[in-house]
Length: 349
Image 1 (tube, rainbow, N blue to C red):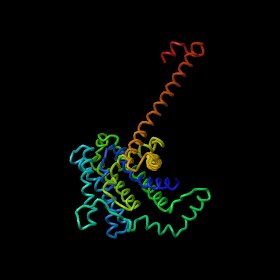
Image 2: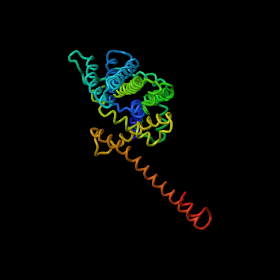
Image 3: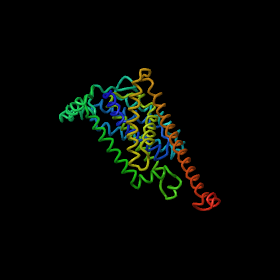
Image 4: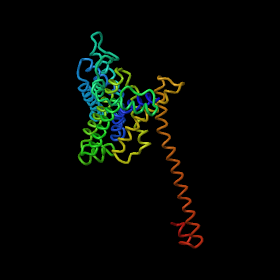
């Protein structure tokens, strides 16, 4: 149980980077970008292809980020310069990326133009490289000894990926927090809030939308590259429903932790991604469910994340109304007894 939940948390931290990208488009830019389903695979395919050809995993991962950024920029160009509907421009780019991703992964074979998957089982990844360094520190044995003394069984083989991804994800979070408070970041946020208003201040909203979509899909592709190296393969179908996973993470995080500040919201998105993976992992442990039910479970989680907060808010609103009504009745009762202003005046108030 502990090992399974630990794996879910590890994956959740990696997927949190993708969720931050989805947050930038759907919440900050108010742009329904469906490019995510394609750019996630673009990042995975680019990194896997470059690692296959012997490039260093860090260079391959950063290259995936750049390719994802370009994919997002093209979506922005279709919308701003091509005057295509925001939703449709994302769908068109997502469809185009399916063939592009096949082509990217097809570079690793001479027998065909496209290739649906690449195995990295025999290749060094960013995680295997880090594990070589981490193993020399002796932290794994110390942590496993500590938890075994507490009675925990089935401990993970290594804690290195967990700590590495916490550092990487938090670094990206802090960079995103800083960026969204810069002049350009504030302009992007204002574009999402009121495009007409920010345009009246002579801001180039087209450039801001293109930049925002580029950064968002760059983060998504970066997450895809890490997931490909984590799972040791890249597949053309691994991005299906990725936008739903990102939205689920954002919605769950916002519902639980709130959205008062940017710093708090980005942290909520990361926590939401982790909670989502934990819930998914627990759901898959039910005997009636299978791995093929993941999309159904995801849909149910999103539905609950959307409906439950509304039910709680309605309940709180009813309690507030009942409290205000009781206070008015108490005030009227006092006034009728001559303890305050005349009753007619109080009712007028």
